[in-house]
Amino acid sequence: MAKKQFKAESKRLLDLMINSIYTNKEIFLREIVSNASDAIDKLCYKALTDDQVGLNRDDFRIDIILDKNARTITVRDNGIGMSKDEAENNLGVIAKSGSYAFKNEMTDSGKEEEDLSIIGQFGVGFYSAFMVSDEVTVITRKYGEETAVKWQSKGADGYTITDCERDSAGTDVIMHIKADGDDEDFSAYLEPWKIRTLIKKYSDYVRWPIKMDAEHQERFDTGEKDEKGEPKYEYRTVTENETVNSMIPIWQRSKKDVSDDDCIQFYKEKYHAQKNPAALVRVNAEGAVSYKAMLFVPGETDEFYMFREEKEGITLYSNGVMIMEKCDKLVHDYFDFVKGIVDSPDLSLNISREILQHDRQLKTIGQNLEKKIKGELEKLMKDDRPAYEEFFKNFGVQLKCGVCDEFGRNKDFLRDLLLFYTSENRLISLKEYVGNMPESQSAIYYASADTVKHAMSLPQCEEVRSRGYEMLYLSSALDEMVIENLMEQDGKKFCNVVTDDLGFETDEEKKAAEERNTESKELLDFIRESIGDEISKVRLSAKLGSQPCALTTEGGVTLEMERYFSRGPSEEMRSIKATRVLEINPDNSLVKALQDAYTSGDKEKAGALSGILNTLSKLMAGVEIEDPAEFTRQISNLF
Image (cartoon, rainbow, N blue to C red; front, side, top):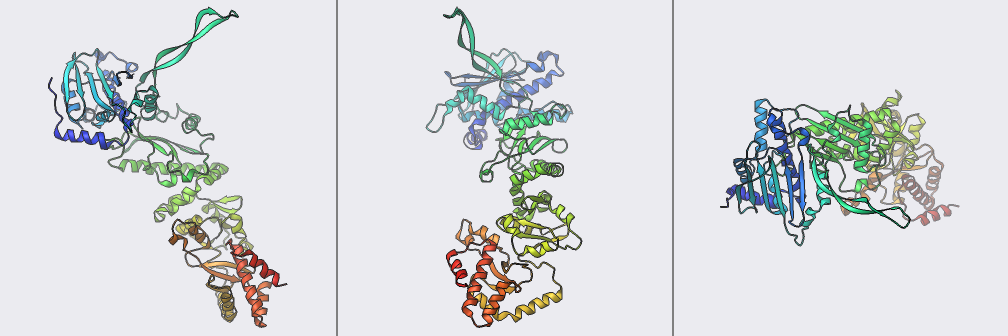
């Protein structure tokens, strides 16, 4: 029996596949099972018009047989099988796909049925068996033929093909598992638990039953009595042939057959969740790209969620075969908290079935899913506000990051999902805020600090609140970046009460304020010099209400941003500082005392009061003071 050689290009490709194309050895079983499913699809389709097939739909199956002593895994199907020529063409020439040709033939002839699903259209998946096997034997018999064929190969050195016997149509793929190496435990693939795990992971939703023998302990009556006259029982090991896979996935079933409660139960079991999901998205899309999806917005999270490198995410299937356990190309990172399944027969897959050759279909699916997710979240906000606010506390950071990422490209898509605090316990959307604005209010006012409570206590907020205007209170540098990216809401600009012009002063009042600062220039320069370089400017302010002073900034870096940068990983980032400005209230008694001391020539007291004002402004702004003891001494020396 002469050994035949693979074609030169096939030999090179086989070596490449075994060593490079597949990044995960365990997918070999997925590929072989998918080919078996494909073969059954073909014979099942033929049975629709050929009474001689003699098999009903319930008769088709895939068997997996383990033999630890022989170190073999056999995958057996009762599908269409192959003739000698087909075995020669399909197994001897890598990337030759009988399934792909079959699908094209059905499409061209107009005979493609809704129930027809061709999985094994990739042509090379069979050769993934050589990642775990040192020899592969295929015994196959074509439906309608009397003689079977045996194809055998140890890899790139070639193959043999001979006639043999097989009782009926179908195919056996027998893989002789490699010996264990220093870094490889190939023997694990001979363990029933391992094979069952791989089936559940990759092939759980293949439409045909995948069966394996399973051992169980069974109690039986020995027929004897114990000393109390009771029957004596013992246990024995029995072997039962069981179906391992679920076959029909819940997301493939119609809404009339599967309730939302059924979906929620599936979610809890699959993702080990205690709480119901905050939102459920079910899609059955047909058109240029057909797909089914069942997605869940979790109802809970934990404090470590944002720091996990691997998140569960969305699992991608093609015809019930898992392609990617976590597909990060479906939705943007701002929706990476979404879990669930997407299943499409229209994906363009590469030869390893691991990544997409073209992402056009995936991009289309992703865009549609994001609209569906957003729609469900908006519905949740409208129908169950407490549940939405709980969701936002869990995952609002992702939405905020999405507004800032890609130079604000997605800001308009996400803006209606954002919530902001208007008090310590009240959240509001920007659309709601603008809807509540009185006609006299021209801007959206906000203040930023390290906490909402702290932002509410800033002296610059007093004048805004005194006019009856609501404010947004930001508690992080990320919040400030979100506001900067959004720029406006329904035509209303954002106004930072700490750094921006509130718009309350008339031109005459602004002119008078400038004149007052000019008149007080000598005093203001003295205060700045007394404080030192940490303050770039001192100015009088009419927006401080009852407070004597406030610390504000000029330029693009605020105090909250400075705090954020101070925790950065690099010295360059940590060196970014805000340009600080001390604002003082000329009508406050402390500022008047400073002015009196300066006018009377008591520069020492005036300098001490300047330092006290600076320290007070830092305390109110949440800036850490370097020497609390010195501040205490300064206060004590005044009395």
